[in-house]
Image (cartoon, rainbow, N blue to C red; front, side, top):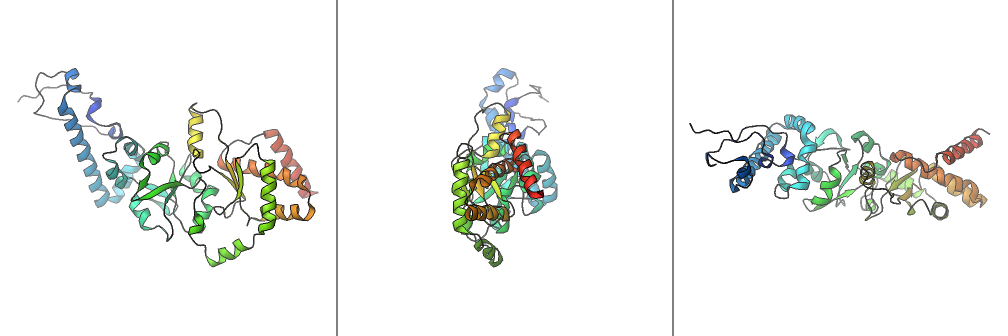
Length: 331
């Protein structure tokens, strides 16, 4: 019996994303007279660490395959921590991607990336996701309405670490991760049903173009651009990040931690098939009076901000415009 206690606190024995593990490492290869300081520089420690990581992930893989319900419970408790490894540990990234589970628009049960890839629609070439403060907020976001209309599954992400591992990983099985809140989502590649196509054809393109031009002029200092949208279905408007700009949820996280002061201008997308947008376009065309539509432009922007969980630009002006609109409605 040569067992000698060395330390009960060895930060280097496991990576941070496995910090939920507790146990004892019994090794006959370490010298008996090793100190805590010497242990930190011992090359054997790296081998022990690699073996522990490999064994742990192997056991988790077995659990996920043989007892998916038990693994789902494990992921619910420790998934956010384990996902840190996707960002930190490039050597184990492929294994961790297979272990990762996500809530999605397909239902309440967590899904793997393999599940998602197997359900991708013809013409779909990306894995779509949306980040928010909660899964419920992500599921209700107007930015994913067009995806739902086409039966495209969207991953619902609510852990802060998701904003960091996705750019680091980039893709899964040669399929890039793409935020549903960014421009250029290429939804037109996936066809709508015949009924939805008929509804889309009802939009008056000429009137809508005139409305978009006025919205751009009115909101020039508040938004980066105004565009018609294929991502909207039931909602009239939404805000998105332009291609190449910072994701909306990441910007919010950085602001909350004091790491960002200046807001990034967003793109306002309008739904040309929505009755409100159609009505404004017709009023502009029929009366040629832009004053009412100009006031409505700011209400539309504030509506998009509220739905996004952002404060309105000017609370007093918002209240005044809303009062005026309600008075006209009941007058």
